[in-house]
Amino acid sequence: MSQLFRSPFDRHSTASEVIDGVDLSGRRAVITGAASGIGVETTRALAAAGADVTLAVRRPDAGERVAADLRARTGNDAIHVAQVDLADLASVNAFTEAWGGPLHILVNNAGIMMLPELERGTRGHEQQFATNYLGHFALVLGLHGALADAEGARVVTVSSMGHLFSPVVFDDLDYRFRPYDPLGAYGQSKTAEVLLTVEADRRWSSEGIRANALHPGAIATNLQRHTGGLKTPEPYRKTIEQGAATSVFLAASPLVEGIGGRYFEDVGEAPRVTSRPTEFGVPGVAPYALNAANAERLWDVGTTILR
Image (cartoon, rainbow, N blue to C red; front, side, top):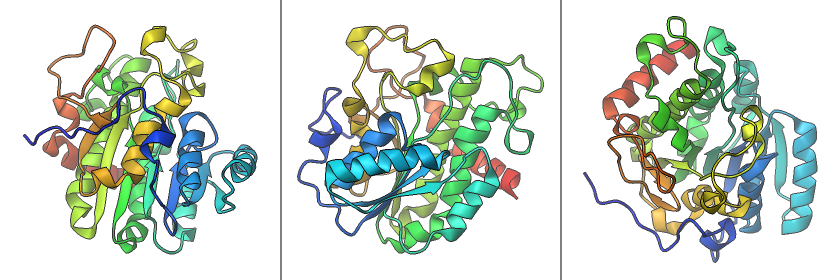
């Protein structure tokens, strides 16, 4: 196994700090879920560095309010809003078909967490798997040509330490045999996002497309609306600015040029763990989330579903 990548930053670093001195003029970025939480800060940091940024959001009205604020704060008028509902393949396909020109940065940031009851989304699949994984998989596939045209693109996917609660259960992706478990379903969808990263990087790195996944840390956002709020003890929490740091680092820092197929946390590559940690701190990454055979299998499953 290759040596873990280390950066000069840590869990206390902010998005502004990790992108300091980086010029993104002429670069185009798309960020899903950019109307709230760390998506807003990720957008702000990239726009402040000169990028042309599109907020890919489910509710364009909310996106427009955020975009207007960020244009004023950054002095960058090249902040756009587009409607993308990851739970609706027609919406995803409409966005990718309308996109023109190269795309240098794609941040798969949107997500849903721990739906209390079993819901089914895209073509009958469990809703968290359908939204967090299938929606982003369709987006990545649809934008493949634009990413290749950039001649040096980055795909950044916001996963979670939640992946440690479940591998992808290929024999029962949609809880048709198992009792529904909100945390297990969330964990499976987050593992799927890491596997998307692994296989995209393997398939497309020769085209200049590098992909990485990350755990942003424990940040109080709308993501926890079904859990009664953030439960992580105060010393282990991050601010929004700290929570966006790893996403921004992977999207823009020259320090990770040529790095791909990896999983990061606290602005550094996460160590592999053999079991789920019982204490807070650096949770690490499960080997099943980086397994090449799992990644290829899931890609084939996703391709079949989207046909």
